[in-house]
Amino acid sequence: MNSDLAVGLHIVGFLTARGGDPVTSVTLAETYGTSPVVIRRVLTRLSKAGLVETRRGAGGGATLARDAADCTLRDVYDAVAHGQSLLRRHPGEESGVARVLAGYINQLYDEAEEALLGRLESVTVAEMDAVVRPKVCRAIRRGG
Amino acid sequence: MNSDLAVGLHIVGFLTARGGDPVTSVTLAETYGTSPVVIRRVLTRLSKAGLVETRRGAGGGATLARDAADCTLRDVYDAVAHGQSLLRRHPGEESGVARVLAGYINQLYDEAEEALLGRLESVTVAEMDAVVRPKVCRAIRRGG
DNA sequence: TGGTTTGTTACCAATCTGGTTACATTGAAG
DNA sequence: CTTCAATGTAACCAGATTGGTAACAAACCA
Image (tube, rainbow over all chains, first blue to last red; front, side, top):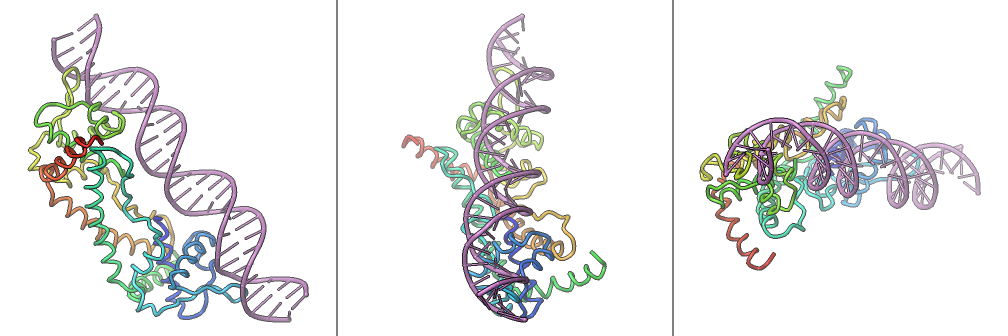
């Protein structure tokens, strides 16, 4: 699930920068540097979560379904992370000693994850866009 | 690097519980549920970091090199995590747009990781042992 | 000298990950 | 109503990562 969050943030960021007109998975794939299918896999999740809308057929593509100022990075995370957490947990089937220890460690991980999620919740897509977009423009102007 | 931290914590925890006498990698492997080689790989790191001492030959094994109250979970983490971080970063060779975004995300990850490391730093091995050991004993008594 | 244990390398199977191919489905436009 | 453009989805693949195994050298003790 690693890059899914990055892809998801790229999508909502790009759609924000594009104002209202639909963007195709091909465009998103090219700008991110991946394949359209990967984009669409994430796009489907974002769509089911109500963050974006997609339209098939000619002139179709994806658009933001919400105001970018009304959508936090955690919303994107929740849409994209289907159950899996950022920090890999320890598998559960160990017995005795190892199990107790795994429980202890996982508890520490939970705290850390909560902290991260809280941080993601404190940033809106609009704010992210405001930080990222100028840098992207500068990078493009330099020909990167 | 996932399970290395768990293994490392198991090692120092077990050594703490054992008071001072040396414990072999075979014993540590059996109690954790892995192979001696895996244990020794981690043991080597802990040893190089000065957290444990190992002795070869008959009657050898590993012992704590420090007071358990003087050793934090972060010390174990630092010894065990050779450069790799808990949260997988995004690879760096992407160009333009994706690179800027990756930088942004990695920055958020850094904050989260700092939070986790701070938490690990706030717990000593002795404290962990105090929490974990009774649970382990109970689990063993139940025959788990 | 022989047995015990760590240190280290090389290799293997399983899993994860991201990518690709292929195709069905939907929609717009002529 | 046909054609083209786009999403939705499943099946499969190659590379990386992971934890484990086998093998053996090195150290240490009796």
